[in-house]
Image 1 (cartoon, rainbow, N blue to C red):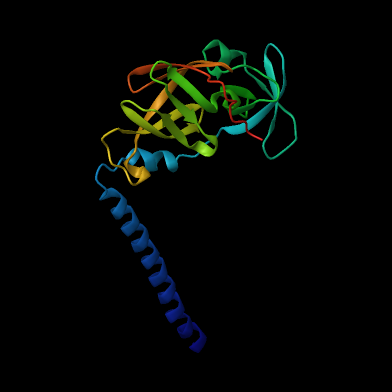
Image 2 (image 1 turned 45 degrees about the vertical axis):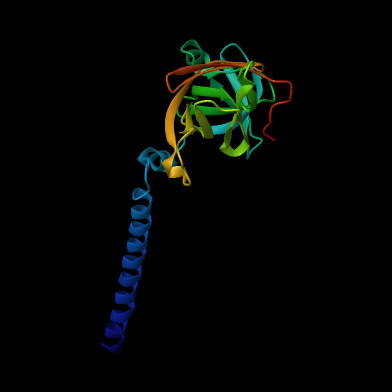
Length: 215
């Protein structure tokens, strides 16, 4: 009987700790939502599981790609012809390049595939005004001599590209204040990319310096 009763304070303490942890989490969330210009989509995307993985292209045929992952040398094969037919294979199939590959693992199909080696680095969309943008490694993004917006981040999530940005007049000290839009890659190669986002089309060419590479 004594042992059973002695457990009661311990259980009570556990409930108290759990309750405090929950309160702390709620307070953090409240602080975020109190931010002026808080954008709930930022947190929503942060919490969305990503089924794509970073794959290195080893070889390919007319209907299949052969890749390894960033963490394993095991060679995997996926059929990509259907994805390519509907514009979901973006970039050149260049051996050794890195791709964000969104697969159907059960059927071994490519649902979407984006050449991140080609996308990364600096791009110029207004040569006269020397305006451009840069897709930096680890998801950072920056504007070169910006006009209307300043780019902040980029995210590849389940085969889709999201661009995070702020207006030139916007003060955003916290990333939860960034604006976010899904971007469409209409064309991608080593030297050119066409991005459609924010109701604009950015026809970009590669400046002279070399792009970043994933290693």
